[in-house]
Every structure is written in C-alpha cells, then in structure tokens.
Picture 1 (spheres, rainbow, N blue to C red):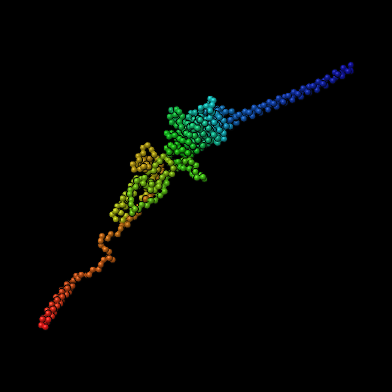
Picture 2: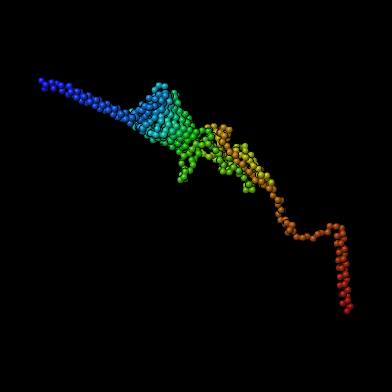
Length: 444
C-alpha cells in the first residue's frame, strides 16, 4: 500500500519534467525556425540587391527598362548601378515627359540578341526628353548609341558605335532636337538621319570631343563649340564668326590632332608694306595684295577674304602716277593707302570677282553682319626729280680747251690795220735791200 502511494506521488514530478522538456524543445525549434527565416530573408534581399542594375529614388530594379517605367514626377532620374547589356526605350508613366539617365560610371551596351536586338542602345520617342549625364558609357556596338525622335540632351559621358553614333528625325509630324554640351563621341559617322526622316531636326553642338565624320547636307546642324578630328564637310555647319582652329602642339611635338571651334580672326604677316617705284611697279589684284601681306584666316571656315575694291583702286591709281613720274623723270611724293580686308561668309548668291582665285570680290553679305575685318597699309616711296642730263658729245668745263679771245672792239681793228701796214713796209724794205745787193755785185 505504501509502495503504491509512493509510485502515485512520483508521477506528477515526472510529468513536470516532461512538460519542461517539451516546452524547451518547442522554444528552441521556434527560435531556430525564426533564425532560419531571418537568414533566408537576408539572403533573398542580398540576392535581389546583387541583381539590381538601376535605381529610381530609393528603389532598385533588375533592368533599366523597368526602372524607366517606374519614374515619377518627383523622381525622374534613373541611375545605372552596374554594367548591363540592354537596349532601352524611354517610355515612362503618364505625365512624365523628362527623364534623366545617370550613367554613374557604368556601361550600357546595346543588346545583340533577344527581342531588343537590332535596336539602338537608347531610343527616345517623340514627345519625350532624355538628359544623359556621366561619367559612363553608352555603347551601340553594331547599332547606334542613340536613336532620337524627341529631345536629347547630352551633358557628359562616352558614346561609341561601329556604325552611325546618333540618328535623328524630322518628319511631317514631329521634329527631333539634340543638344550636346560635353562628352566624348567616337564612331565612323557621328550624326545622320533615321530612315524615314526628311531632315535631321535641330541639333546643336556646344561642346565635347568628336572623333568621326559628319556627312554633308545636314542643314539644321549647328556647331558652336567642341573639338573635331575630321574636317570633312564641317565648315558650313559653323555658326557665324567661328572657325576650326588647329589644336596646340603637345610635348612630343605631335599635337592633339584635333581642330577646335573658336573665334574667327584675320591675321597678316605684314600689316605695313612699302613699294619702291625705282624697282618697278605694277597694279595689284586682290589676290596679289593678300599674298604680298600674307593675310589669311586663322582657321578653316565657310568664309573668304574680300578686299575693299574702292581702296584697292585708289592704290592702283597711285601706282600708275608713280610709274608715270618715273617714266617722265619727274618727282613723286610718297603716299600711303589703307586697305580693309573683310571675311565674309560664303552663300549661294555670292558674286565672285573674275580676277580672284580665292574669292576676293563682291559679296552680298556685308562686313557689318560678320564683323571680321583687318587693315593693311601700302606705302609707295617718294621719287626725286633727276638732274638735267648733259648733251651728248659736249665735254664738261674741266675738259674744255682754252680758246684765244677774239677782239670785239674798233681799236682792235685799227691795231690789226697798223700791223698789216708795217708788214707791207717791211716787205718793201726787204725788196729794196735785195735789189741793192744785186746791183753791187754787178758793178764789181
């Protein structure tokens, strides 16, 4: 009986230990499960973070296209977080028309396969505006870096393509616009039209470095600044009073190989020229004057030099007078003539003087419009009147022989008569003496 009671009294104690063990096991299991869940969540978050390539605001996305679609009126900047191969179109939610793409030091490479293959790295449709800032790279590969039907603004970055770098389109419905203030652009062809375009649209270059060719005929392209490696076709695109100035020489003497858009100016090796009539003169043409003074533009431009025709004619009139004075052995006083040389832009309606091989002649655009001119001065030296020449065969005073002076008065005539009388008397005496001597000889 006591033995049974003892066993009965021990059951509650055993049961308590069992319950404690069960509770501890459950707590440990729950803690382990919670830790596993936390670890799994962090792992998923880390994995998602590692796959993010773009960011809008504080949210990251696995593709640039998705990030562009999540822009808002408050958050319009898409930041690239990693190098990515993807061709994107700038399409955003309703109401968002301006998107900024920050390359953030990474590269966006156009897709070579998949559904986006065959498209530019970035496509800007009509009614959308995209601003690209760097540093970073947009690489088109075999495709353009950018196709634009809307508005494109490039502030910085590197852009490359193995074909045409940037294509724009002006159609009956829309007109593209482009503005480039900085960046590096490299491709065989830098700018051109989209296939269905009638014109380029309005594209303005305000800065940047451009290595490649720009085709002719892009009538609405304007070059205001920047550096260019290929001068083909560029002169007509330069804004007024601008030219392509050769780059400075680098330390190794090779130069940077670039031409920089800068202010156009006229320089002359000799601004003051002196002509000597004694050496022979002839009238000067406009080209003669430019060559004589070494006058030229400081760079390549869609301009030509025009010599003031009235001033040049005045100089030639003075040259004629000087040569006439030399021919007539007369004096000629020195004269100077100032001549203005102006750079005027070429145009379809220009009339070029026939005697000018470099376009110096009449031009419909005036110097007031362009405001680029220089002045040279041409002086014709004086000619002194020569001394009277001596008559041929007439010796000088020092060589003249002395001549006896001939009597010119009446007394001289009388003296001559007396001398003649004396000579007659002397002759008579001689005759008488001779006769007397002969008679003496006979008597003996």
